[in-house]
Length: 262
Ligand SMILES: [Zn+2]
Image (tube, rainbow, N blue to C red; front, side, top):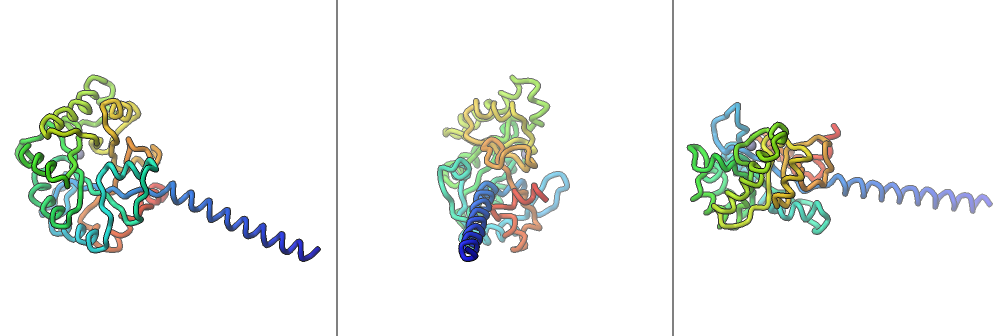
């Protein structure tokens, strides 16, 4: 009898342990995302208004990804992973940059080409051709290279929650910018990035209706599901992210999840 009790006790413990492993695996899977790195300007001088990373530091960060055999993917793959359509190696990341500064073409694009790393660049269409911003010539060249995905960052970079009171304006910012880019580039534009990461349900629905396959934000702090493809979280990159330990932590699949639970 004692033996039966012992065996029963042991199997119950084994069952409990197995259950705990299963629960942790499910929890970890649901907390796992493809880290999406977010850049803005690539310049040497610090600018208090624009987050920037110097070309040298960006080169070091990209060298780290290349040398450590990271699987760098475009936005379509990020979505394929989030929707459970594709599995990705543990070391997978995506690279994005916002606003359309000319220095992306001058300082970041050559480095991405050197290491053959794909990236997505979100453009404010009203700024195309304005001094300090990219023109159609550079945008077409990068888009035609197949390495750079061009996405929309709206027409005028407004604060989406306040624009949302005017549905016509919201449509013009989201669908209008998509149309302008598609006409100028001669190819479809499938990805959107909310200015300053600000969005609401109406903006998500409008983005879907306008034909976007996904939309990127910054860090919605648990405001939306971690696998919401119309609120894809991103990780802010800065010049301090060059320390290999900090960089390694930032591009871990669980960084976004842990950051929101600190
Ligand atoms: Zn922006």
